[in-house]
Amino acid sequence: MNPFTHFLTQWTTNRALTRFIEHWDRLERLTVLVHRKKMTEAVATAEFAEVWPWLRQHYGAWRDGLRPYWQQTKAAGLPTQTDPFELLLELDSPAAIMGNWRAMQHLPAAREALNRFIQDQFPS
Image 1 (spheres, rainbow, N blue to C red):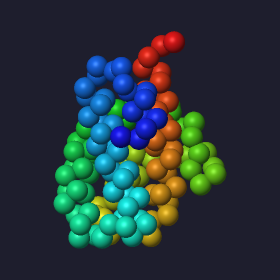
Image 2: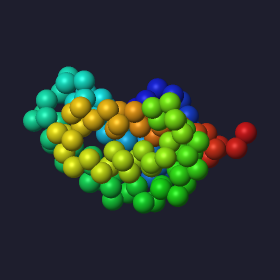
Image 3: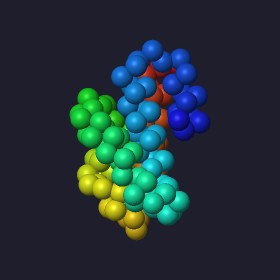
Image 4: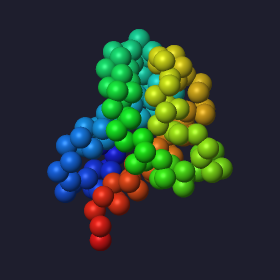
């Protein structure tokens, strides 16, 4: 799990949120490794086949809650106009990650939105 996200979630008892984050972390890791050519498409295929369908099935439960957070982020130095979670979930195979700079530029927006969402779950 992303270290900061792990810190933010260490006290949560929301198992559904934790599972979503765990799967998102896997998507993020696989996306970065494939894009940087540190994982071949062949190796990534099994992980992709497990993670993407699960996230596609469960993202709907988080979409509305995450929307105001990603709308406050930036991608490629500009205000994020596209749901970064949906953008990445629309990829249909590891091959779609290779050379996809737009997807890479939206990963930080998704992570920032997720972390801000988590922070707001625990009122100070």
